[in-house]
Length: 480
RNA sequence: GCGGAAGUAGCUCAAUUGGUAGAGCGAUAGCCUUCCAAGCUAUAGGUUGCGGGUUCGAUCCUCGUCUUCCGCUCCA
Image (cartoon, rainbow, N blue to C red; front, side, top):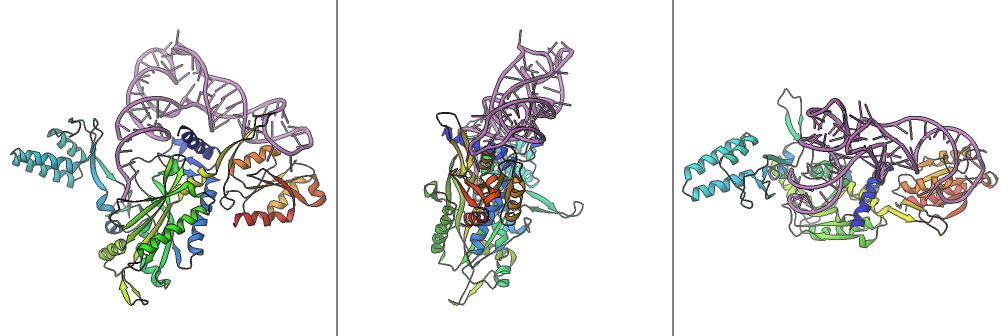
């Protein structure tokens, strides 16, 4: 475990050193649990996003994509249950570390007062609490707790933290401040953007059930503790697909998508034993089945993707709150129903971390004569930020010009990188460190017979090929 | 959020019992022209995380704060 932790730290350092992921606002000492993607990280992330998008919308005829706004009507979050469930004032006892909902704590005290025959005191306490809660007067609530000498049942002390509001949604104002600005939330999940557009997409696209709507986008959760690098961030990106099915068929579609999504993961070249399914025992209020696909990160098996059978909960809720019929008439069975939903939801940032964790390798290349090592990112070529490095062996004798020509030929097809500084070995190692799968080197012989040396990242093998073969080799690898 | 630890150059670290910081690697420029990093020369980079306090003087002592790590807690 110690070595795994070192490995995780090494990956984080490597990400920073080679332009993959930086702490946000670092010159101002950073912002907790927020990260920026650098020149290589943003390419990697984009490649993963694009691959997922193609896998969903291009490889499945009956799945279409949308891109909904981050701002949504406030009622959305009432319908989804987010507003009610996650905005309670809480207080911690510093001695027992136990956290209480403030209303529960005070109510418990009132009950014991009443049991002790002090009903009037109990009523007064509850009345005071309601007044303070209504005004969100947290200081007043703390004083109320202190003045009534309410104790923690575990530690028996009254050593309390301040009262804090635990609202996992970020809020902001829509509209000018002087007017009656509406408080709105940054979406805590992208799924609702799909549900509220269900009718739009179904009708405008003449979609027939079963069909899916895919979306990639940012979501925001004000996690109390967000840690472990990009694994748990306050601002993160989700890749979600909601698949609408006929009621009663949700179990088989759930199984179908479990299998289908696992296939996608394996297509990243990651071996099966690095994954496992984790079935949820305790289900969320909207689900009738749920599981996670967990990847064996250096910090252990952790969720990368969730597959949930969400029933008709979301569409029904939106129907109730919006008064718009969410029905679908199914001509095959002549039935009118609210569709059931199977959701696949993968964290893009977690997928990036997964691909990085899988790719990162420190290799010892020492020979009896001398010590040698390299750090390599063994990305699948389709995900690599740079596909091809073009390197003149020396920067004279016309070799740079030939190299530039090669770059100009291929840069329209895939991302190329030109480099003439330093020895060829150093340049190869730098490309290993950012995961470039192919390097070609131009030397004196190139001028005679139009051949170059192609060097493969993983095997370090080198062979001589014709210049016009480069495109075929690279394209075949990245389209695999 | 609680408890513990840490923060010095891009990275890894050093230093001063309190007297305003050095090295290696890396980077940049040049030399060399060589198919797997660590040949040569030169150059650039630090208000020692930030802000108070004590002191003639703080990177060092002290308080606060931010960030990170470890453990707990939380994670619809």
